[in-house]
Length: 219
Image 1 (cartoon, rainbow, N blue to C red):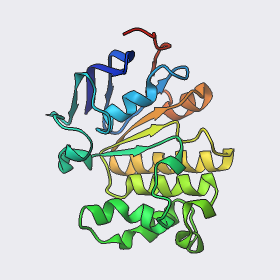
Image 2 (image 1 turned 45 degrees about the vertical axis):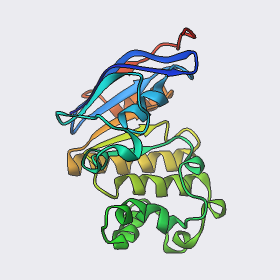
Image 3 (image 1 turned 120 degrees about the vertical axis):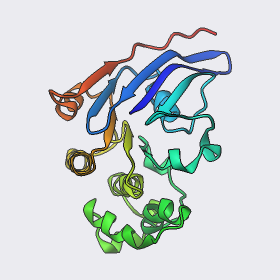
């Protein structure tokens, strides 16, 4: 179980999150909705161990996270796959798509050979793998980012508005791929989006949908 409680995040004098919390269980889709600026993405970064909160607690399968970003323990970090809304801000522009997908494999001392298999699952053809981000579409780049997020077979996958900039076909493909991964691996998925219709379809009857209100600009 991936669990956050009492999470408060402050940027300068602005309190972006105030005592927020959420629970993500293995094998299920949990939805998170809310207006722009309410702190959804900030909560996603806290859960993904890339944003340290001012206060609060995050536990991953019972182990409490005590460090963040590169200082977080590898054993905890690899349990979480994080997919961002804007793929071009989430990759090194010098890397090819193959190198982007293989990045977590190389970082953990594993063979990068699986990158081709992951790319194929995401609908990326071999000719695209030699191209760099500026040479492909947003949809193609996001497919590579999803493949990268799944490369280490995470226990939890956090999707932060990952389909916002994509056409309907690519959106459907990525959601279907993540659903296949969830069913095959038993991973928990956090689906963050402002699209209520997509969220209702994705989380389904068995999922839980949480709604966040607009952020209050207070210190």
